[in-house]
Image 1 (tube, rainbow, N blue to C red):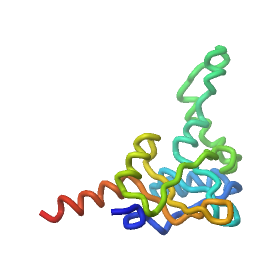
Image 2: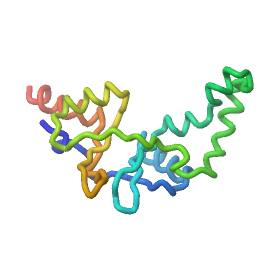
Image 3: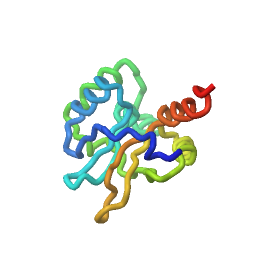
Image 4: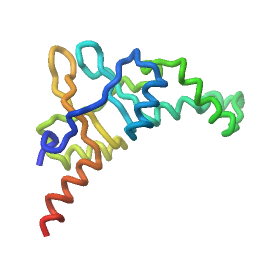
Length: 153
């Protein structure tokens, strides 16, 4: 079984210019933990995940080490609204891992586990960029394996 057999092809995407409040709304409303970021050519240029949003709330390691930051978690959570002024490009990860649609699903799962990813874009190289075809999640892989091996019984 290959990634192309189980990937989700109706993928919500955002652009680097999408306001972070819109991104957070999409994530919460549709229960999506991460979104591919695409440019005007439809090429993937980044990925924005819930962890990127939450990571923004915490002081940097340098601030903590220098004693400049005291961690008051109540105040940190109050700062969540500050993301409203940010764009996706301010928080997204620019280094994106992809899987090929022809990759066996367990090989995709091993890459996801290795890099601690819950979902990964499926893309092919096109005109100097990576064209998004879909997204596959660990849940998609687990469900496919279950249906193939357990539900036949």
